[in-house]
Image (cartoon, rainbow, N blue to C red; front, side, top):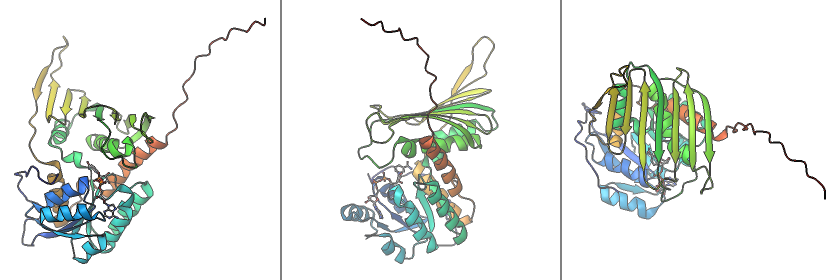
Length: 341
Ligand SMILES: NC(=O)c1ccc[n+]([C@@H]2O[C@H](COP(=O)([O-])OP(=O)(O)OC[C@H]3O[C@@H](n4cnc5c(N)ncnc54)[C@H](O)[C@@H]3O)[C@@H](O)[C@H]2O)c1
């Protein structure tokens, strides 16, 4: 888990007269251990330590990366860190974020920002009051294939977006369903691609195997008129991640696993068109995300994914969960009258 690709990206973030920022990670399970690994390899930061109540896990991560291990957030905060990733389970994000913010520590909180919109807003308000940088870990925005789509649709009249994010059940079931766990990534992408808010939602959810929803077909309309669709589930035996975007002039097809982005263009009246593969750079998305976080701390610029954006995407996801399905209009069949005898 901790070994991994070390990108060759230039580390502009944080370069300057100041020394490296002192950073920590709270919650070093699947996601947090990756944050710690990437931080430990960045010249612009010093990974001071990790905090996790799971003694085996925190000792393993700390030993592998050569940093200190703490049983809880307070031990880590006492080390005087400048910035932190919060990658503990989502229901703890609010309390952990407020604790860090109250000590003037810049926060990158994993997605979703919080389990509820109210808690998300409280984190945003606290960060604003304290004047610290708050960024949300919507890492897909830093996926080079996704960045390639974003470049290709710049100045295009977007008509529709269809995203598929499916796969088998995660090895450890968390206490959230596919909408909060997976679809929130794509809700964020739809809002980011279109630079527009989602104004209409039509969700279809089902719990086929799990207690919470494990299949979701979500349809949206943005304020700018784009129609968008998310197909997500934990019932597909293999992983698939695709994005299709139709604009008035182009049709884009991206496979986020093979990192291939294809553009169809030059539509002719006879049905012919041209196709080309777009260039997709190589960069570990998490590394790019963390560099962006450090960069916004250093420069004071608005972070790449703001707390407000994290709350807006969460709000749409929660509306999908709370929406009452429209009653289907059942065709009225004439029931044959029973004949006695
Ligand atoms: N951006 C992404 O693509 C992505 C992917 C996976 C998970 N996540 C998010 O990351 C967060 C963690 O998910 P995960 O899959 O890594 O979970 P996980 O269960 O693998 O890890 C969570 C860790 O937090 C620790 N923890 C529990 N209570 C704690 C506390 N009070 N203080 C500190 N640590 C505590 C646990 O011991 C565990 O090691 C969630 O918010 C999840 O939504 C994001």
